Amino acid sequence: MQTDKRPLSPHLQIYKLGWTGIPSILHRMTGVALTLGSVLLVYWLAAIASGPEAYATAQAIFGSIIGQIILFGFTFALYYHLCNGIRHLIWDAGYGLKIETVLRSARVVAIASVVLTVLTWLLVFIVGGA
Image (cartoon, rainbow, N blue to C red):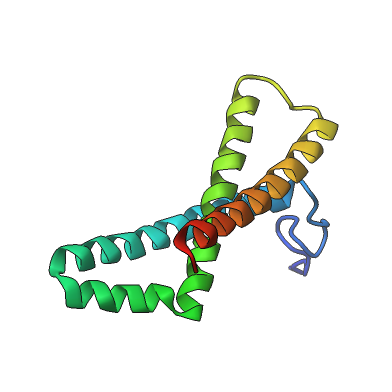
């Protein structure tokens, strides 16, 4: 008996990943990032409760370049997941399901996420005086 050397199901070697698949994958990835980011939030809150030395350590970690990059990524993940979640709520109501609207809303979610992230960080630097 000869076995076929074909894939059992279609995958990225066959299908091109488009504007409908990328937001779905990114939504899942940002959900995981938010879960990991909540661990950092718990660490920060525990540092506050543990006293000035622990808080100073946490602030040094989050204030470093790597810490700032992680916080920037967490902010983007938060806004992307929020915006895309709103998009899904609109779909659940039965609106925006035509392919043209799906593609347009995917772009709107991406742009809104970037704009909201940048505006948040600008506000942090303006108010924080950094």
